[in-house]
Image 1 (cartoon, rainbow, N blue to C red):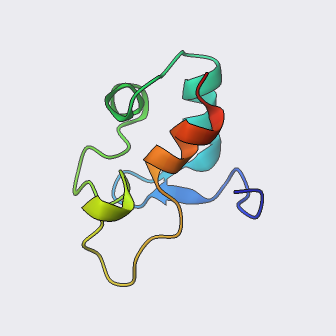
Image 2 (tube, one colour):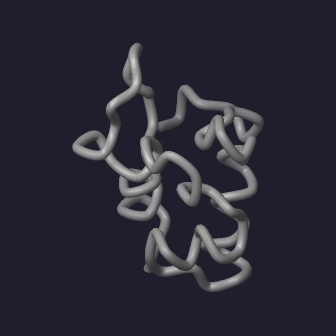
Length: 74
């Protein structure tokens, strides 16, 4: 995940960046994908950014919300 800058757009539908997602996990206490959606709107449109199994887009995304939660959530 270190290769992605904070400006990397994880949710393309809602234009939510990695930095915004990390902020909502660390500062706002998001613990689930649903929490991230409430705070940022990420994952609330098509849902492709939630996980690799939810991704029906072509090409596939490089980073998913579940991966970010796994790395940063406590």
